[in-house]
Amino acid sequence: MKKFLVLLTVVLVSVGIVFANGAAEEAAPLDPVQDAINKAQNMTLAELEAAAKAEFEAAGTTFQARGVTSGLKKVLAGFAEKYPWFQFEPFSSSKDQALYTELTTALGSDQYVCDVFMEQDGSSLKAQMIDPGYAYNYVPKACEIAPEDSNPLTALYVNKNFFWNITGDYKMDYLTNVWQLTGADGVSAKRIIQLSFHNPAKENVNMSYLIMLTSDAACEKLASAYKSYFGKDYEGGDGYKNIGYKFVTEFVKNVSTWHSSDTTAVKTMTTMTTGQVVYGPLNKVKDYPTTNDYHKELAISGWNTTIEGFDSYFYKMWIMIPKTAKLPYTACLFLEYYFTPEGFTKGWNTEGYYSINPAVPVAEGDHTLSEWKSNSLIEDIDYIDSVYKDAGTYIRSLVTL
Image (cartoon, rainbow, N blue to C red; front, side):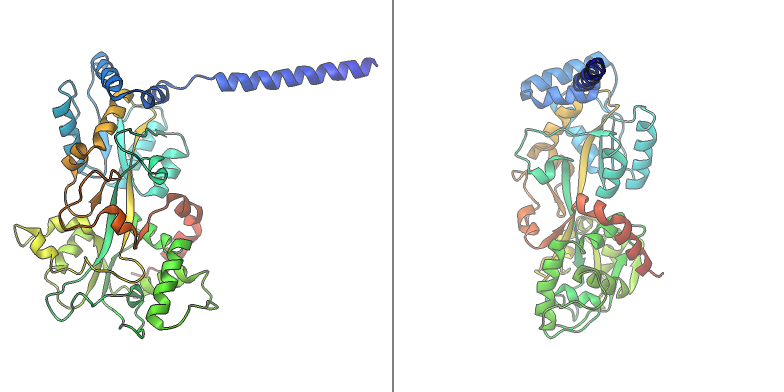
């Protein structure tokens, strides 16, 4: 009986300790930045404006932002015009991996680096910023945000397209099916053997594009396009994991020019009438060099056409608050402004940039984000992260320069 009572006492004490520890864990206070973000999430805009102004004036410092696009500088300037009490440090854009290195080096040592950052390459964002707990999310109330864009918060969408010069012998119907880009003739069209592509081992967005081609959503599109192009169903049995891997393999092997700069490749396309197809960002059209109005040269490229399979690949840029931010309320207010039509268009108003807020207009003549999405591949960081090691290794093995 005594042994039973002793055992029962030990069990009860142990259970009490477990519950006590659990309660302690639940009651653990949030760090100041996360706490401020949580409070801001429940504030009205007027309350957030007051909190941000009070924070900013009490801190006696200036706001710092980091990002991979120069458009962010213009949004900061617009925010300063709206809120005269706001001041920010001079901004210059960074390369994505250089910025990840800067962020993780500082945040890994709990050092201040900035109050908000904007990055691309979802696999790196997840592995280097989200999983270690270096970045916090805030969801603005400026517009309704779809679940797939809310956490992490999508700052904007950017698309990469296929371009070719249509002023010579190669017209708008030159590329009608993505399987032409594998170098094989079909029953509905002929192969294209002049393909310019940036090395995916050096261009992370291109790596994510190729990996997304192996996803279920992409395979469904590719299978439909395959049947149309070759006049038969894809049956497999050829050693590939799925039709996506088949397409990726043949697409990469069909690359005839490995360009080192998307901007240069897209510019060169405007004077090249040999039938070369360039894969690059639509937003580079603003960099066309030979006329004062880039729309004249945009009109000679084959970007605005429907291609069986997919028309383009959409990747995202994300905007988040680092865990060591000095001005979290101000960062939240900045994000509220960023997603308004006024804020977003300060930074981006040409083709190839798309806000998650449907109220933000696209450039005249461009398609809306929802229109583009109907026949495009969309970056999915969870899928890319889940297969990155094996798929990335396989893709790198295909690239022979």
